[in-house]
Length: 307
Image 1 (cartoon, rainbow, N blue to C red):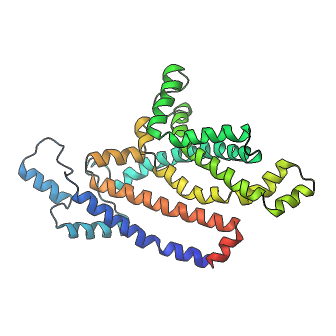
Image 2: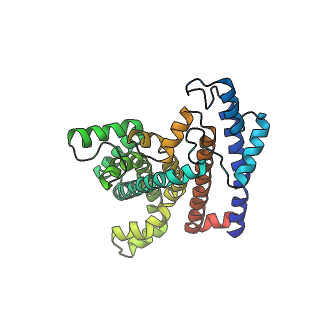
Image 3: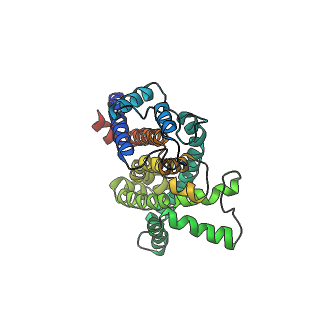
């Protein structure tokens, strides 16, 4: 396991370098620039701005300077908000996105796991069809449709929840539901499929033959093996929840990093885009590694293959 962990960690740096390189040249070669949307400035002022942000250097020189800065932990100044550096803006906004992702993950697990267990306990009955129908509906509804629908029903019609914001507990309910709903649907279907496969195996029949009650058979003996597909899914799912909140943060006016990235993309804030992508890529790699380690801990066959 330790060798497996070292091998996986050794791939982090090349993958991150590839992501930085690809993102850097895609952003720099896209039409427009960080000062194009401001009011027209004199040519001399524009040259001074480009010199201040190192934009007057050759592109390869800018790339090498940026990579050298990242290695030293310097993500550069923000073009759009020069009062803080990119690192300071990320440290300010990232906790909000992480909090939203954590709530959404909690929603996904609290809804998805019980729904999948309920469906697998009595397959091909109403107890199976009803939660799986809701799961399919959750998969089919994207965030930008579900979010406004929830606002329309629970905020405008019923008046139970605020329309937007991120200050009070009530303001966090609808964004968390919007972001977590689709992942709850996937977790429900994966739990059902994994449990159905495990519940047909010999050791489960032995447990039933010993007289164990069905809930104990499912939860104690079946769930450990049946939940493996969910564990494998949780890595990319958690990364998706933490990094996929762009639309939700925009809909509910949440001051998170996803909203910051969208605004940076519109204003060609090169360094903010690069910093946000770097943070999200690191999160995706780390969370996938955690999921793989958890899967190896649960399944001895994975541990044997990792040696």
